[in-house]
Length: 336
Image 1 (cartoon, rainbow, N blue to C red):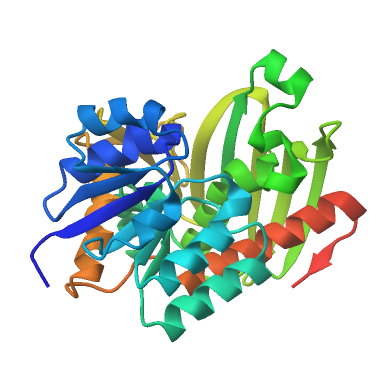
Image 2 (cartoon, helix red, strand yellow; image 1 turned 180 degrees about the vertical axis):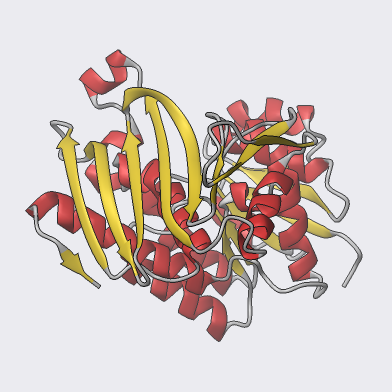
């Protein structure tokens, strides 16, 4: 295979326009060959701005392009499952936006299809690829804060009042895989499982629901083996929170409210000893986590590395999200 891969993009979503397409175009090992949009007149400006060679008016036409090695799917949540399966059937590797699917059974089917076709499938949890995230993981793994006993995480934002009132947004529609837990809670579940290094055994949750039926404000408690606990918050009605902390028996790692999306500015975190009120600030130079993510995926397609986030990881994340949704809905503790 060539030293660079050719990407196809299914859909003209904002996350693709603002973050992922620019990251692909400046990556060392890939470029965007084609963009498919059902509103090509809206996509033509994006194609021109980013020097994208081809613009298709249907997703199927893009999937039939034999020059494309991998596709990126930034479609609404309920379309992740069908279009991932179609892309895999067309012989394309797939980088799919978070959450990978609307539930664990869909995610399992997607993972099975990728394995059967010997193709790569990865959920686009970009925060894992930022150098700061990697430094934090190394700090935890080296035992500098002792065994992890608590992870706190929050990803919340205040949705526009008119959108909340009208319900005219995919995030507020149950039939489109809406809800705060799926939209942003997936990050918090991921970071808790990543730093605990194991899977939760018990789940509890409470939620406030939008009139449409989706959760719009949720808190959760996860119990892990070896006395581990994690708390998470996910919300469309809270002021902005975007942070996590990892607490061990001998210290803690803490961040401000840029934990998952620090953009390209210097990224700071604090390591605090068990008896310290003020910890040591450590700085990671600014980086584009989306570029790191797409370069990692392209390296995997080129056979240079193994996926850091294989489908099995995302399936387990979805199993926890399914359990939290049930816990919030029923008020019962869920045993995994």
